[in-house]
Image (tube, rainbow, N blue to C red; front, side, top):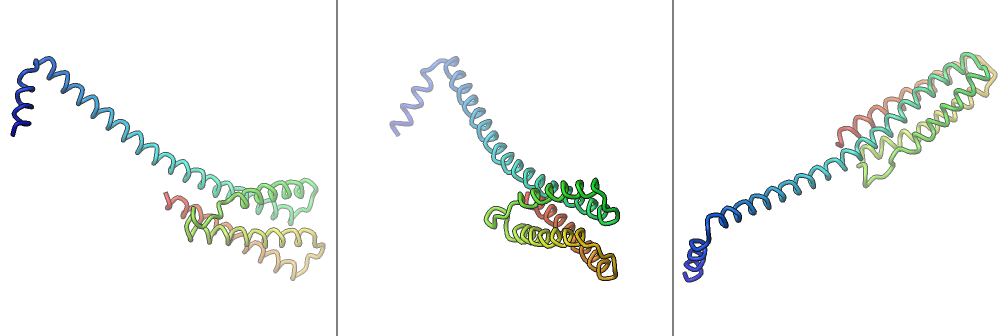
Length: 173
């Protein structure tokens, strides 16, 4: 009881100007605490958002490069010119780099993204080998046409895998 009485006596003994100063000080401390908490929350969310943007950029880059490579492969297989072949080889290198840059870390990406990325990298390796083999072939018979369309089917699968990976990456955010 004595402590409450002493606090009451102290409060009654100080001037109104001092009481207003204490009140303003408490308000300023609370405002600073709220601002710091808000900045911390924004920083955490922006860091995560930046990571998601980076991941989605990598997937989009792989998708764009792959579509360009597939278009260059079709053009090259229809008209084998030095210009088309050089363009195809540039696109193949861009795609190879973009596909190898995709995050393949189970702990960071989760199982669905990990499996899609692994499927893309494996399928792309097969697709690239088939394209090289078909472009090196001089035969243009029925077997070539079947293999050509199977290669285009593989390209369709890879494209869908990349689109699914993009969706999973965005859903993870």
